Amino acid sequence: MTDPGSDRPSGRRWPLWLGLGLALTLLACVLPVGLAAKYVDRLPDAAGAAARSTPPPARSPRPGDPTPVAQAWLRERIAELLQQQAAALLRGDERGFVAVADPASPAAGALKRQFRALRALRVTAWQPRVDTVPIRVAGGVEWRVRVSYQHCFVVASCRTGPVVMESRWRDAAGRLRMVAVESSLSAREGPRPWAVSDLVVAVGRRALVATTPAHRKLLPGLLAEAEAAAVVADRYAVGEARPDRYRVFYAGAAEWRRWYGGGRPSWTAGYAVAVGGGHYEVVLNGGRLHSTVLGDLLRHELTHAASLPDQGYRDGGNWWLVEGMAELAGAGGRPVRQYDGLPELRRLLQSDAWNGRLETAEAAAAADDWDVTARYAIGYLAVRHLVDRFGERQLLAFFAAVVHDGATPEAAARQVFGEEWPTLQDDCVAYLRAAAG
Image (cartoon, rainbow, N blue to C red; front, side, top):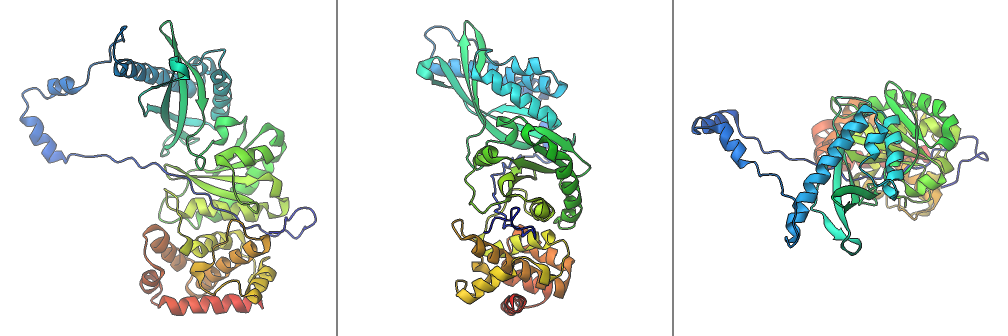
């Protein structure tokens, strides 16, 4: 796609790649109240039984003990230190947060940076859990352990989302200290911006925006645009729930290559990634971002955050619908004739590179810029036709049935529109061909 920099003041929206991270689902097994009461009534001492079922604390290992003894003890000690660290973070105590690290180790500097970034993001929850038994590394003098953190920003009552990290610990003379921390195990999940970068942050009523200190001067404008985009994105929320805050991170060149694993297609201007707890985080590519299209880009990506399932979504056959609705929001109500992708769509239709089926419209990662633009236009115009014919409320119902509930377009069209999908699809394609001219 053509870079819409200063030589393209008209401001074409770039197609926006949707990176979907992995959302962690926690399952709880609940005993019905009546059955629980019946069960407790049969116990002569329910409290005593509960106490007896709690495993005793792991004992301190002695010379000659098998490895599992040391692992159990270390796991408990690490958990205790991380709980102390979490309390320090929430009360704003940097020294206490960093105290778990060996002062001479890389972990100390990493934790200082994380503390300042998390506090700038107004962290409201930080709940660590040691997920694995410690494993010996570095010739047996260090231990590696995986930790997950349920966390939240700005809103105290929000649903927490997870992030997974690996840390290394050293036990020297009975003093256990962290010596290294890695921001994520998954290239698609991380590293998160706050885990590896210094951040400056601005928080509004509906949006949170963050970037590195080098781009500090952009924060007021970014926040104003994000707040305006949030008003539009809220209209496309599926169901009653809306994001408590839209989270937006503006990346410079180095951060774009690093945050959330990097590796996006070269035509990407922004993406939304699911991070768990019903939250999405939006990343903007500062290297491909022109001020004239910032609003379009934010409306597009925040609509993904508002409309997609909590755990993310990936189905190439419905790509046109997911991206089409985000493009509809991004267009900001402009007439179809002002949509910037029409010339590229005309070129695609003339090339016979698309077979005319909406389920095959998805843009390839290695596609040329013009081809990507044309395929986003397919999604936009198909969705625009459905809105013009049935209204926004019906479109949202169709979107919810297909994207959230897993219905086929055929079943959803009959249920929501009272029409057969093959006929509707033909109508959508005829509409976009006419719009392309």
